[in-house]
Structures are given as C-alpha cells and as structure tokens.
Image (cartoon, rainbow, N blue to C red; front, side):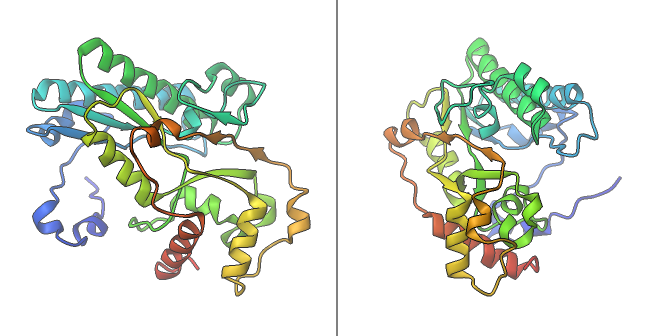
Length: 288
C-alpha cells in the first residue's frame, strides 16, 4: 500500500514530542476512532477535492458527507470529545442564487440547485462543502454534540505542504499564472495563520454557536496588482492595470466576519502580510 510522505509534518519543530500521526481515510469513517479516542476537541479540516471533475458531483458529495458523519460518530462514541470545529468554505455561503449578494453573513447558504445549473468553477466542491456543513450541524443538534463551523475564504500566506495550495495559486495568478487564467476579479481572503488561530479560538471559547465567517478582507484584483507590483517589481506582471479593469470574472462577495469579531477574535495579519508571506514561501519552495 502506498505510503504518503508526511516528512513536512514530522520535521516541524517539536513534532517528535507533540505530534502523533494516525492512519485514517475519509472513505472508511471507522478508521478515525483511534485518533479521536481520549481527545476533548477535534478540528475536522479534511475534505475530498476534485476541481477537474473526474468524479461525479453526487459521489464526491457522498464521500464528504459520509466521511464527516463517520468522524462525528467517532467523536460521540469517544465520550471525551467536548467540541468539534468543522472547517467549511466560503463556497458554502457565496453562491446564494441568480441574484448575487455583495455581502454575505452566516445566515446565507449557497444554493445547491443554482450551482448544479450554473456550474461555475469548483461547483461540485461548493455543493459538497455546503451539504457537508449542513449535515455536520444537523448531526450535532440531533445527538447533542457541540459542533461549530468556521468558514474561511481564499487562505493566503505561508504554507508547509510541499504542493502549491490552490488558493495561493489563484491569489498569485498575476505572478505565477497568465492573464487568460484570471477568472476572479474580487477575492475574499484571510491569512493562513489567522485561520489557525480562529480554529483554536472557537475550540476554547466558552459558548460558541453555529457558523462563523473568517474573512477580514475583500480585495479587487487591481489592488492585488498594485501591492505586488510595488513590492516585487522584479516579477513581470502579465498585464497592466487598465487591462485588469476589462477582465470579466467572478466578483466574489465579502464574507462579513462581524460575528467572529464580536465573539472576541482579532485578526492579526494585513493584506500585505498575506502576499509577502505567500511569495517568500513560494520562493523558498522553488515555485518562484
């Protein structure tokens, strides 16, 4: 059986004392039992992703929902888990229907029927995240398990995995891509370290409820161009500012994070921090 290289995790500082890796598979929910046994909190961040549509949407969604419910059952069975923080996605709130909204909050849900008919980029992923988040919250209510969900947008900043994350590749398309690949004209964004901090914040919060958007910034592509061209003039942008204004693409809604901030969370990183950390990390790993 093929073993995955997890050295990027085992080589982290203090990993030998603080990190324990279990073998588990979303398609085999029972396999998660040993990993949650004795735990008081669980962060569920894993999800199947298939942007190339090699798998039918229904099959992808079923794997995501069944895997998540299996993990929640393991948490329930453990008798020790007090709270589960499920990592959702901006795609579960952004596509509300034919009439897009400029700002969305935790009351908004992506319209699954609309996604199936319109089929924007990543539509099957958006459906799977929407239905899986709903299933997780419903399971928690039904079984008395404390489940809260965190909804991040494009996560930008430093990364530890060897592969270039899709969100960073999309955010840095002006540097690592081509003009014709720009399919988004306004991005919702958050620094990766702030997402990690928000997970911990919700786990430790005395009484969180339901869903929490985690998206401090809404950034037009013109602003991205100005930040990158000023900070990194050595990279030849594939276009100029005037041409950017002519690009047709998705103008993503702003995910207001008022609920999370009202609960006491403070975002630490700026827009420039996100891009500087992402580019420096890409340079270190040989992507730039």
